[in-house]
Length: 290
Image 1 (cartoon, rainbow, N blue to C red):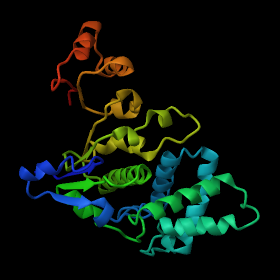
Image 2 (cartoon, rainbow, N blue to C red; image 1 turned 180 degrees about the vertical axis):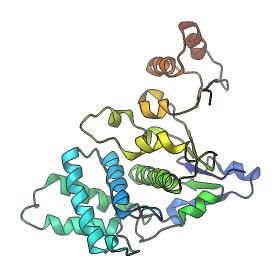
Image 3 (cartoon, one colour; image 1 turned 90 degrees about the horizontal axis):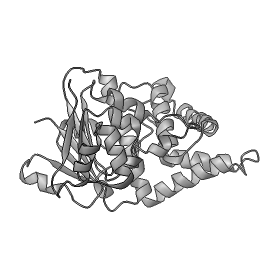
């Protein structure tokens, strides 16, 4: 069996799979999962890790280019404090980032800086709402990728869920690129409600740098990582995602989503009429060659 990771948002939606695959491990994120998004995969340089972390944070917080450069300097300072560039194996975590931002806000030059304040408030909120990010190393994600796994995120607040998904998928895709294993499917990641991360409004915002997920997803299949993503609103999904999915499935839909289905599936008027009238439990599948 090809190992897979199901990132479940709704309560225990995927546990029924255990009846068919008893080797599946279920991880309740609220109790059993630790993750330090500031620590990149083994073999990834600190500079690449810093860039991935900043881009993912920018994706989560609508940070513009000018503000992104400020955050780069802040995280770079933390990396230097922890001797990360001197091959130290100890990385800072979100608690350290919160503390460092708090200290910077005490300085007269930054006391009224809205950007720093917003980032401090976000870190403080995440560290208050959950213990997931309060760690230097965290859970063994490489082991999770070797074993069929269901990661249950239900019971967590939306901001925590989005932060986990964006940073974890960024981590996985960077891990695959670093391993450089081409030519065969190694692992599959399954995500429901994927507009949380493949958000078209961010893609269309020309002031923002494209987040690494949109860049990395185009290389995922080449390096052995399959992505199965689902959402009820295709109109809210990025063009990058739609362009880089080899197999597409749609059920009955209407309105603006029907217009997007027509463009994405390259359907004519007669075919799109059929989609709008599909009975419950029936879908249309489009598969590209190759």
